[in-house]
Image (cartoon, rainbow, N blue to C red; front, side):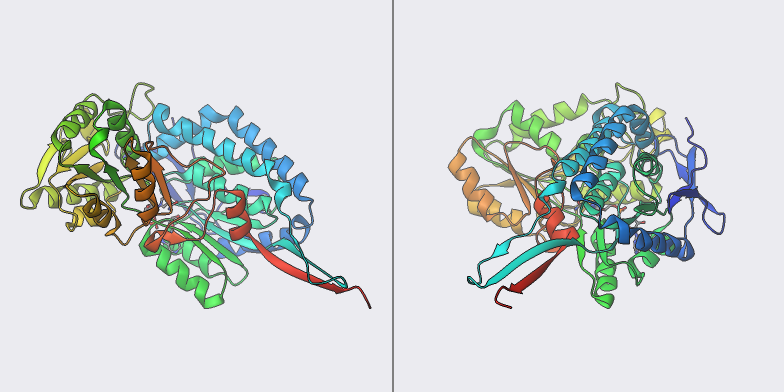
Amino acid sequence: MDVGRQRMLINGEWVESLNGQSLPIENPGRKGTIVGEAPRGRAEDVDRAVQAAANAFEKWKCVNPRDRGKLMIKIGEAIEARMNEIARIIALETGNAIRTQSRPEAMLAADIFRYFGGIASEIKGETIPLGENLLSYSRREPIGVVGGIVPWNSPVGLGALKIAMAITAGNTLVLKPSSEAPLAVLTIARICSEFLPPGVLNVVTGTGSECGIPLANHPSVRKLSFTGSQEIGKTIMEAAAERIVPVTLELGGKSPQIVFPDADESQVVDGVFLAMRFTRQGQSCTAGSRLFLHESIYDSFLEKLVKKLKSLRIGDPLDESTDIGAIINRTQFEKVCSYVEDGIRQKGALLLTGGLPPSEGPLSQGYFMEPTVIGNVRNEWRIAREEVFGPVLVAIPWKEEEEAIRMANESHYGLAAFIWTHDIGKALRTAHRIESGWVQINQGVGIVPGQSYGGFKQSGFGREYSLEGMLESFTQRKSITINLQF
Ligand code: NAD
């Protein structure tokens, strides 16, 4: 399957970049195979898109929120109707397995549009009691042109999120997907464009330096919403500081999973497996990649986990029987390998399963890696501190509860956390002490629309994904006070 040469969306039209160049998109499941091309946008293309969004804003902000919501719901339905096509494109360009990842991601995108469509009329203000002779009330107003930048690991889920939040709130948007995975985002943009007026949504494709930087720095962009790495998040924040525009940063993580001694059972193994996002090759910001196991269950738990991991099917992302697909590209693949090499080189480290990828056989034809577990890791090692963004779980034993919580919090990240125990008091006490934006107890699922989502510490700031997140991040509050005695 090849989706051919795609165009990008500016002012309701499907266009090439002004320089006519395009970027090839590789299939991570089959090294060297090109599955499509996207325009190689640069500053001049970004400028056209921002101009179109600025022009469209004047009318779009006046559309009744309920009517904006109705369009979002229609977009959600249309995405669901084309779910299989979208899922195939996600699988092709990201390497994420179609059954376990790509189809659920396409479904999530439909749900996101429906959720924000349903709450559109909740964009409301308050009245403030300043006395009998004064009427004071607040309005939630859109901000203007939003610059949305998303990564490759969940391109459609995150793209849908930025589109639905920004546009439902009455803003217009210039969205830049990752140059590694722009094709499925362009497909959902095509669906959106069938319902939205020209210029309300614009999608420019290109690299971070050629297209992302001009978008972040464009003087007419009034709000930045960035999801990606911590390193690039810093440069986005500098760009926002330069012009004093609000910014939301959804960055990386190195999330802990704490397993208490009473939770040595197969459903916890399944939950830990899910929380580590192994079926997404660990390429998730919320991956629970530091496993703190109580010493009394350390061996028996890992034995069950390793057995489960060895039973999984790795391979062609488009094959319905595949559990685990491929890592996004060569650079990321080599980075993950170097983390594994570094981890297993440490004194006392034990490679329990997986490890460096095969150099021959069918799996060597793509960027495939087996799920990897390294035992006896120390929390201060690089492999336990830095975000690997690959299928690599480190296991760290603990004795005292205090010690487990201290180690879990010893990280500059604070995105997610997972706690496993039947003792609900202990679970809640631990949850309250964990420094993370989202703590799950006895489950390891992905985010659901409606939950405010975002990080503590260097995992970012600002909240998205919910009504409150949309109000906080995509509207600005205006107070109006009237003297009734005038
Ligand atoms: P990245 O930071 O390299 O790129 C993210 C986006 O920014 C891409 O579209 C890229 O083209 C663009 N970009 C790159 N350099 C830029 C620059 N100088 N100026 C403007 N834009 C620029 O991240 P990635 O490798 O695509 O994605 C992986 C990272 O994303 C991981 O760190 C992961 O944890 C994080 N992530 C976070 C969340 C979250 O919600 N917290 C969700 C998914 C992924």
